[in-house]
Structures are given as C-alpha cells and as structure tokens.
Image 1: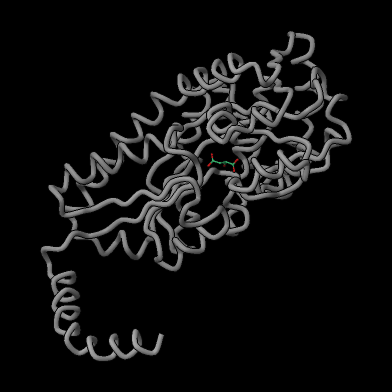
Image 2 (image 1 turned 120 degrees about the vertical axis):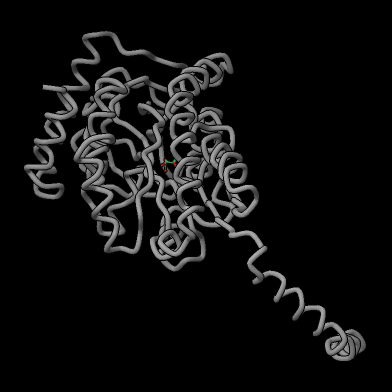
Length: 338
Ligand code: LMR
C-alpha cells in the first residue's frame, strides 16, 4: 500500500505535463462540444430510439463539432435527479415525461395527464404544435431550461396481479404513479392508493410486492419486463405518456449560432422519427406481451370502456385549481378540435 502511494507520488510530477497538455487539447476549439443526454427508459423504446437518432443526425449535421453522449436506463440519473442535473449543467439534454415537471414548479405540464384528454394523434398535436405547447415551453425559461420539442409515446395500460375489467376491480390496490398530482387524483378517484416512485425502481417494487401494480405504456412495460411480474394487463388507454425534450438554457444560448441551427435541424428530424415510430412500437410491444403468455391481456368491451370514462372524467374538474380552470378548458377544447 505504502509502496503504491510512494510510486504515485514519484510518478505524479512526471505525469503532470501530460495531464496539462491533455486538458489544454480538450479545451482547444477543435475539441467537440459534448451534449450529455440522459434518460430513464431502455434504448429499445420510442424515446430511446429517438435519442439515438438525434445523436446520429446531430453528429452528422455538425460534422463532428458536437458529440452527443446518450445515457439510457437511468444509468446516470433517476427521474428527479436528472432535472436537477440539467439545471446545474451536469447534463445538457433530457426528455422527461410531461408528468415530471410538477416538482420543478411547472405544474401546468400535468394537463397531459388528464384522463381521456386525447382521442388520437391529431388531437394531441393540436396541443403540442399549438399555442398551449408554446406557452408551456415559455414557462420553463425562468427555470433555466429551454424546451425544444415534444416526443410522442402512447396511451397507458394498467397492470396488476388482479383481473381489472371495470373500475371497481382496482379499488384498494396500491399502484405506482409518476410524480404528478393529476395522476394522484386520478388514482384516488378510483379508490386506489397511489405511490409515487422513480421509473428505475418500478420493476423491483412490482416483483417484491411493494406496490400491487402500475400504469404505463406497453413499450415501457415490455422493456422493463414488468409483464413478467404482473399477471394481468388491461388496455384502458385512459391516459397519455409523452415527452418534452429540454436543454440547459445557458448551454444552448451560448452555442455558436451555426451549430445551434444544425442541432435544431437534427432535432426536427429526430422528432419526426419519434412521432412516426411511437404508435407502431407500442402496438408491437403489446403484441409481444400477449405472446409471452406471462400476462393475461384484457381489452375492455364498449360497456367497460364507458365505465372507466365515467369514473375518470370527473378528474378534469377536480384538478382545475392546480392546473388552472382556463387552461384545462382550453386544453379540452383544443384536444377535441371544436
Ligand atoms: C415513467 O416514469 O413511467 C415514464 O415517464 C418513463 C418514461 O420516461 O417513459
């Protein structure tokens, strides 16, 4: 031990010039600008694939002036930490789900969690591509964050070890939710005990019975192997999961204008890719879950769908005070296209 310390002490002065010149080379203008992009899901998901696509497009468009490092599966940070890391500049880019902006103080993003708000993609795009989507991004600026794009994922299913045909079947269950008060209200209105938990902890919590079940999109259920520890899945499509791609504002504003333009172009194309693959990825995931034979998949009948809607639509009114009465009304109007 002592010998090793001694050796290090002796070698350090010799290494110093090398270290210093390395550091200098790093800071030289020829070294690439690094974008650390952290996310919590698997690579093989709509978000994971879109992030990889952005890396490929961004590095090509900037001819190597920018290097994008992707850290999937919460390898760098979990849900809450990643937002703090972005604000501190420890990472430059994230794509958290819209349900995760409440703890940041921008609770209006939780409007995306309103049950049965969107009927289809067009209905969603009237919000993300419209005034509401723009206004939400503007709210991030004071938090030191710039919003770049909205990436789609899909509609949520419910999983647990109990068959869940109608709302009465979930009463008394303990279900994991993301950190959104709208989701909390949604679960309480069903008589469910909601448990906020980071995405990276869900599989183990389901496996050990810390929670009875969860809600998520099929692509997340499959890639986290949640279906292997859940006997039942109901295709309720009661809510939505999508993402806001965000960057550290200071970092983004300081980029050379031409580089920023190239990155914006890459983001536009990556967004088109994300929104093109999301639905088919989730359909394929649901099919793979069904084929695994580990989980019984139930698609509600029209009458059952009616019961879920009836139980969940009052949530819109219950959360008006949190999100804003006018904003809820505007979102419902925009989503309906009327
Ligand atoms: C979740 O926490 O369930 C999702 O937001 C994970 C994700 O990013 O899709």
